[in-house]
Image (cartoon, rainbow over all chains, first blue to last red; front, side, top):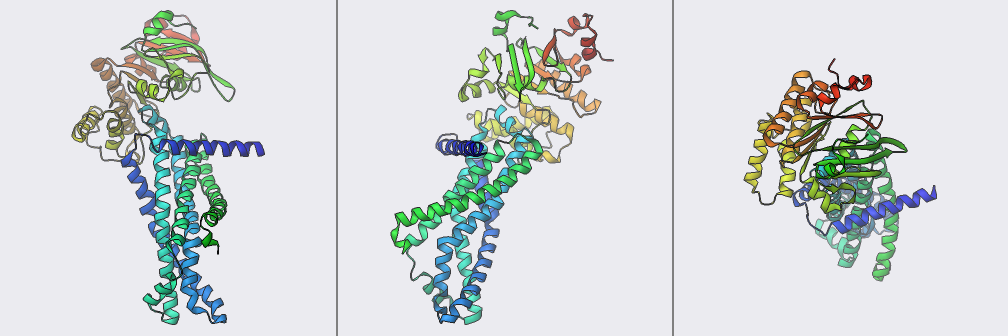
Length: 254
Length: 254
């Protein structure tokens, strides 16, 4: 059990290393990459924005009910932006994408394997790993931070609307309070850490989809494993990355 | 069972198997199989289901490697080739899958254009478009280029798979079960297309088939596999003259 777990980790690591290496060597499959960027980014946009907005509203309602007891409702925008930009935005985007993109990648590649489409690509002298895996890894790595920005923005907007309906706080004042204690250094590291989430989601999902050889049962397993393992790994990676961010940017830990 | 060409003849052949063994999960699928296919010759591989016919084709194009023995294509030992070497050899080959294995997220035009875009960079987009239309016309699908594979009938998918295998004008064409799942008339149309490729382009072919009627129309030689071993190899006339009841079960049209 332990041995096979380590073997699996070794195989996934080697798979991820190959993707990293192949990303820098031609051919670059630009057309397919553009399609994958759209598949990951554009197709997930509404989900991310809707989830961010709803979370923003709910969080403000919860925060208000607590802070009102201390007469500190003026701090709601600050809490909201800090929570979203530091943790909620990146983590929730990562988990949402593990569900939406991870399942899609795992199932699609496993289906391509089961129906010999990946073999067909190889017989055409096209490198299937570069075409199918590297493009998805790049797309997820690039698009996760972009989607996180939209998640943060929609969360803050949801928070404002919720707060505005209760206290009639103006947009200008809300924004001022939300960002008065935030520097660029508070925004960049947590947002960029989602590039790692994107890389991990793509590698894990591609691994399960690309390497399966169990036919239609493999499709089911690949989709399930992609979501479950990606989500778990993202949460674990988040702990490590937050530690790293605090180490590299000590001001954030204060 | 030995081939008909001898070791020296095998090295001059387009395709040669030398004492090839192949197994999966401890089960031997091919057992010391040797034969060769001369340039311009059409070999039909016959035998019961699960006796290693498709595996033989996949060994020829390097999708599998032999456990023992050698698979030589144009004199190149497929097992010793690196990725670039494999691409060079595959560049001369076309492979028509039993299931057609068309890329289901691409239209027919895109399926056919994909290898041209990547492997023949001297061709302009217009030339690629013309080459795709011309190849689709040859298989009677000139009006279906914009269709997605899922919208095509089984026969149309087979013809599209053949078109994709022919798009790079291969010197060697490998065809897996061209008539499986098709009615007699559609199967006959596919056979006629293969005969046209044979007579007009003098393409070397290896065809896996259960359809002895079609095999007799197209094949110059038959290789009959039985329980992983080569039961017989030779021209249809040679095999017809053998008094072997088991062999006659495979090659008789009755």
